[in-house]
Image 1 (cartoon, one colour):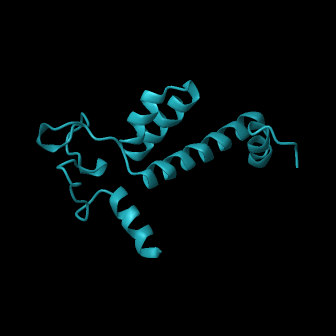
Image 2 (cartoon, one colour):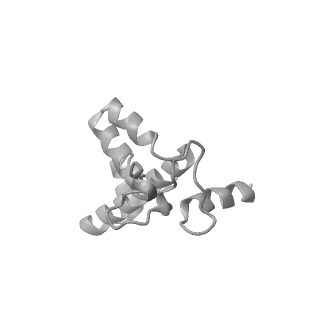
Length: 115
């Protein structure tokens, strides 16, 4: 199990371990230009947070085409991690804004009764 976690994290982090994906597509951490384009002038790659933001906003708009597009930018595991991180940050931001606990905000967002 730890080997799978290590492999997922290694794929998310830029550095000498990062390798090109099958099919010639580069990982998000392999950009070397300030404008975000991939090396070799290829198509720009997306990182997991961009994918998560696009995926969640497309889900909120019920736009299946955008959902499918964003889901294809990264692996399902990376997308899941990004969506989870986005949810955590959103709940924390709302809790601070409302001066409530994150648990209270999360339950309210899901329509659950207060604990």
